[in-house]
Each structure stands twice: as C-alpha cells, then as structure tokens.
Amino acid sequence: MISHLDEHLVRERLEEARAFAARAALIRSLRPARRPVRVVVGIALIKIGHWIAGQASKGAAKRNGQPGRVTA
Image 1 (cartoon, rainbow, N blue to C red):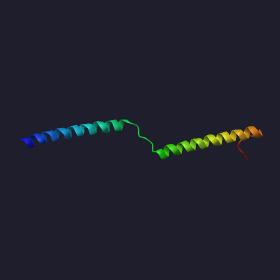
Image 2 (tube, helix red, strand yellow):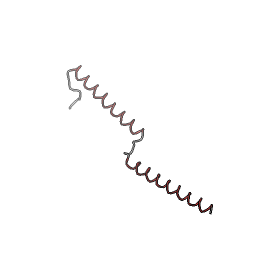
Image 3 (spheres, rainbow, N blue to C red):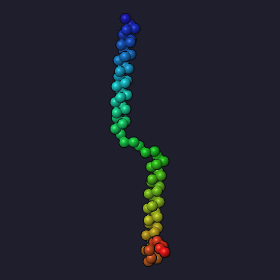
Image 4 (cartoon, rainbow, N blue to C red):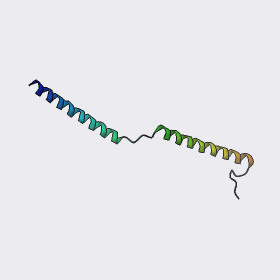
C-alpha cells in the first residue's frame, strides 16, 4: 500500500513538472530571439564608424569649400 501511494505521488509530481516545462517552453517561444553580444557590438561599431566617417567628410567639405567626394 505504501508503494502504491509513493507511485501516485511520483506520477503527480511528474505531471506537474511536465506542465511547468510546457508552460516555460511556451513562454520562451513567445519571446523574440536575442542577438549574440558579438553581433550587437559589431553593429554598434559599424554605426559608429559610419557616423565618424560622415562627420569627417562634412567637416572637410566645409573647411575646403569643396565637395567631400572626388569625382572623375
């Protein structure tokens, strides 16, 4: 009889654990995927580089009174 009770408790706990795992999986699937840190840092560095390059070309054009790009 004790083993029957133990078996019932184990089944109940397994059901609870499976239900918890199913809820956690559902919540995880609803969240947007996170980008790796290296991707975020890379994109930030590219944007900073574009911004600096844009500032440098604007400053050079204003100082020289000529366009920032050389055309043939």
